[in-house]
Image (cartoon, helix red, strand yellow):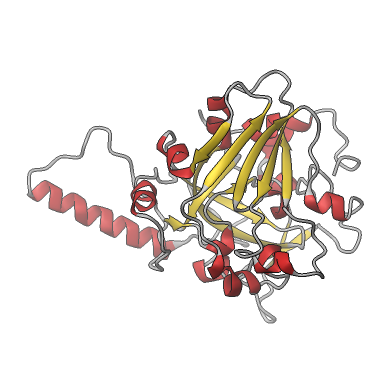
Length: 334
């Protein structure tokens, strides 16, 4: 299936990512020369390795490391400069580990992402509890470089490793009653210390949801890695949703349950503040948050003397999803 990519951001606002690309191209060319010298040809069904790989080790089981290495590289032409790995993994919203951006990296070491099980329930012919290893055995991982836009008006560009959510959902044969897909995060105060706090404003477990059409769209990703390695705990290990045209809080982390529902499921931030966080949560520069503008965003990394402020695009630049909302008032259904 051909996936249209969003139009490039003006070159005045972005730069290519030469370091990672150059390193990977050099390694691939070197391996090719060795193979040629040895008289060994490439396997007919070989897939390109992920283009962007960090040197930082992320502890993970051998089977997952092997699966990540086999992920097909993102072959699209890159325009946006990638957010450095250290920023992607140290500036996070994951309230199960604290409300400050640095808290997830500091406090998520207690999370045990392996082994991991996911319950599938609701309006589908096949349901049950499945090991993550068995789920990944049936899919081909891909590298996808996506923009991530937070509702707080900051953004990143991240090379995820994952697979299309729709390819998984089809395996369970959802029935005609399945209009939405609901997701639930792990609830375990021993592993997620902020769930023990009496001062938390978020109810546990964290829940999110999509329409069936949104869930089946080819851009919607279930991620198990980033920068070529397994997801760090603070980024939602071992399994998280990535919906690049929506605000980041829709991309639920550490998923333990997927449910096909007939009615619109409750979502955590919408429960907490429905006038601020709608169910759809599509990135829209024309619809401000009640307490700040959404017309621009701060692309990380940024600083006092280099704030890196750019214009926000409708649907975060992924205009091919507009057909999902034909006839829908995007101001009313924010």
